[in-house]
Amino acid sequence: MSTATASPPTIDSKFILPFMNATREVFQKMAGVTTTIGKPFLKTDANAGYDVCGIIGFSGQITGSVVVSFSDTAAEKLVEAFAGVKLALTDPDFADAVGELANMIAGSAKKHLGAAANISTPSVVIGKGYIVANNRQIPCLVIPCGSPFGDFAVEVSVKRNPA
Amino acid sequence: MKCLLIDDSRTMRNIQKKVLSAVPGATFAEAGDGLEALSVIAATPGGFDLMIVDWNMPNMDGITLVKKVRETDKKTLMIMATTEAEKSRVLDAIRAGVNNYVVKPFTPESLMEKVSQTLAKAKAAA
Image (cartoon, each protein chain N blue to C red):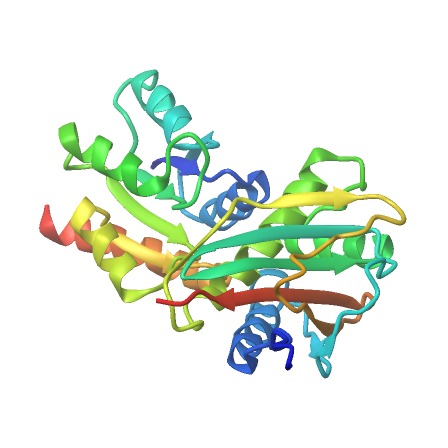
């Protein structure tokens, strides 16, 4: 008697490069900040130790989410470079700016994913010790990024739905 | 030049305002979504010369707003500023009635260039 087991979910690597390019482009064009993009790795630790994140959902032929995560120090500096004004974490415009950065990264990557997709309006989480629980059916790849203001990460958890 | 900036991100509206402040005599109104934009338009005597419109917004998205405005107003210049960059989306926006299209992320220079192009083309057509 044999027991059939499901294959583990896999990450389509062609989904990752658009997010890497989008991250570079968004920070360069909108904030004048040059970022470095590190080697992606599979997310295994639900609590990644960040303080601020912007979350965008994908729907349509591509489903899942992308989460752009920062330490509070890096977020404050990157938001200042983007918005052109210093904003406290508690300022509603701070969350707006983080959400817009995530929106542009997701939106800019979307056109290169090879399938039709819609993106949600952003949600922003600010606080210590939060956990972003990704869809367990879709592996999450973490793209580590560097900037003159500190490191941040873009977590990509998307898949293409069968036609 | 009376400008209406329509985007659910106040940060983005502030960035656009900063860039467009270089246009002599530019004044600004803002709206956070298409529904709010329609209220602002209705409440503004003489309307606007230029609108910068985001696509993805709550309550009423940009493409719906463009279509609604174009039902009665063929004159106001409208530029869509959005992350939606697929060819089909650009065509949808042009068919809806926008005069130009700028893809986010954009540099201040590229936004200003699109605005200048749009204004120059309108002036030449007048």
